[in-house]
Length: 351
Image 1 (cartoon, rainbow, N blue to C red):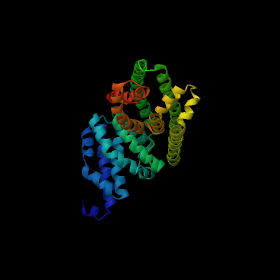
Image 2: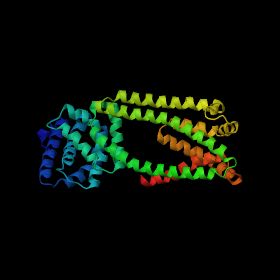
Image 3: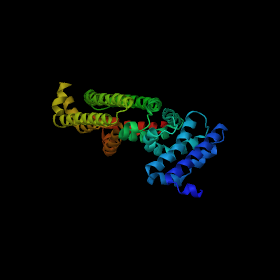
Image 4: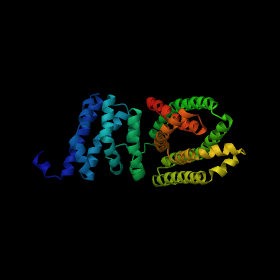
């Protein structure tokens, strides 16, 4: 720096240097020679550390360079390998979310709409797992800052559809496995002593469990619609309140059914059958049923973890009892255990 430049404020010097970098970067982009600059910018660990503790104006100037790179990638002016795109997003996506509000206020010739579209387009070129991580980071920032965060709702919708289609493959295989093992267990139940009574008993329990689960599925469907509406409007606070409300309602409904089944399941069983023997067998299945009903009210990931831990606990007694004689509670135990034992590996393999 010249002596005249050193007499200027530090932020003015930084701003001038950033203008020079952006000018050179535009030349490199015009000649399709900016790939090496991307690698250089991704590996600026000192600048990333400086960004964490620097003032807002210094952070703003650093993010101006990232804006040019994001727009160039999103508009196909800059063609990089997947590793370079992934590295750029992992390094500078978070800082861009933090500085977007300042970039909106002081644009200095930057096209913020083009930046939002370019960030979304670049995100969608990554593998689905990396997209998930970055979109969740954006979603947390959006829920806190609202309009101070870039609007990536269009890209988010595209990612959601892709994830849904990918998840549909998983659920199709899982549902197919559940159908086959349930059919096999029903056939095996024919060898149980008093097979008619046993099959009537655990089929009633399964139907009741499924009915309660449909209520929770309906609430989760309502949550999905509300999230989509609030994301489209750009409202962050109502979104969080809506999710908490719907989750609380689902858990409360699950607790009500849990208490009813725990205390009055023998009496409730007479709503489905008038046979005293069937009602007694249904009562013997109440312990398994009440916890299945309770866990249905939680989110899917919690359901998998909780049911898996409970099924491991009942798995050993199930094997011991099955070795002695087949009973209705053993068949019901088998339905729960096999559901997680066979479908979870298939689900993991597809993912």
